Image (cartoon, rainbow, N blue to C red; front, top):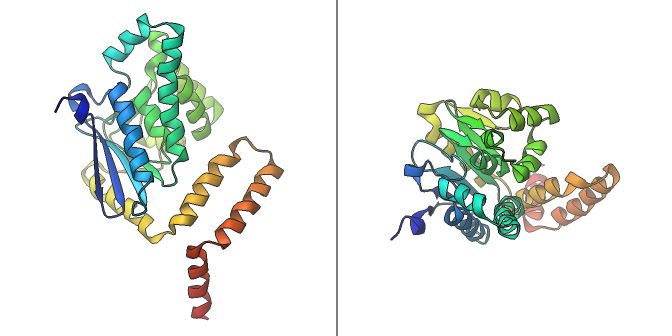
Length: 256
């Protein structure tokens, strides 16, 4: 097996699918093989009726350090069309993370920088070690994390996003949590245990309700207030007709 064929590892345990970025010697830097592999494994997890949540994590000390040297070299010599195609590949991965029916959770230890920070923030939920670091240093080399900006703006305030993208600095996990970039921060020594416990929580939830909620939540982003309420009506009706809801209501009524 070559390094590229092993760039992304995939495993399942019960209802949890784990996608591991497996280039620890390169700090899990993004390249074509990694981006393609993550997308393939996300589709595999999303197509399985047994999987309730997918976890994205990094092998080694860091989650993901952004684009690797070969990717940057390719950018410097590429044509407009080639650069557009390359950018679109990453865009499609970010979009896919929201499109699949199951929650996507990023577990961040070490550094999540540049495109790696974008990958984490594109997840539905971000869990971080207390010592983890987040940042968008692209501006330092004249680059704009343009697709990442779309995601970041939906995670944090306008002013926080502007500062993160134009100052190029790093912030710690606690600060990332304060501004809404991270959902939960766990002590380094308890991280694996806490992440596992967090993921287990999805086993108690209705699969159809979680999938409908995820779809609705992201669907209403660009809607007016009235349109969003109408979308809510449609989702409400669909939810009422699901087997999960029928069983849940029957159990509730039986208690009385």
